[in-house]
Image (cartoon, rainbow, N blue to C red; front, top):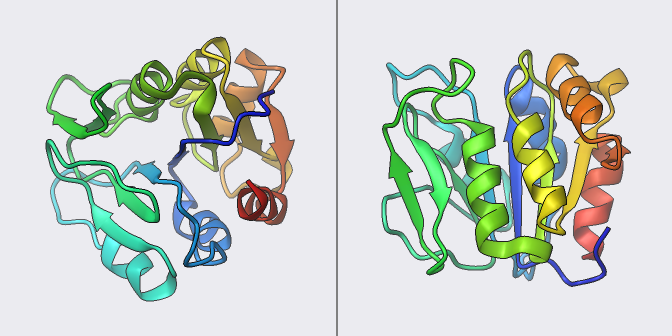
Length: 188
């Protein structure tokens, strides 16, 4: 657990992501000055409408991440389809077409591990609903770097496999409902 004010929030979700993210992102106030970087498992063969959809609901600026894009507070970045999204030490995002991880590209583990390297104890990582184990290894990297790990309660998740895997690998992670996660983020 860290008392440092977070410098970034990373979120990973899969099956049931739309509903889960809808409980967390729209309540964030316009003056929320921390970047939020999101990976959702989406089909690689068609464009994503997540950024557009959430821009209509959120006070934050919402973008689909682009390669070498600077990371700004008050902005939510969504990984584009079929690319891993990474955080670079120089404060930019990068996209990679490396092999899928646990059959996923974008991979939550890839985002969380790169963000842990870049932000260490200034990172909050959140694992939401999903039907595989992506995110568990990345959550472990965040904890080892001194960051804060939050996992959606499997009881309230549309698909409990991803939260369960993260909890099994990271028993020190905070387990919260979607409402509690939204409340936590509004207070950081």
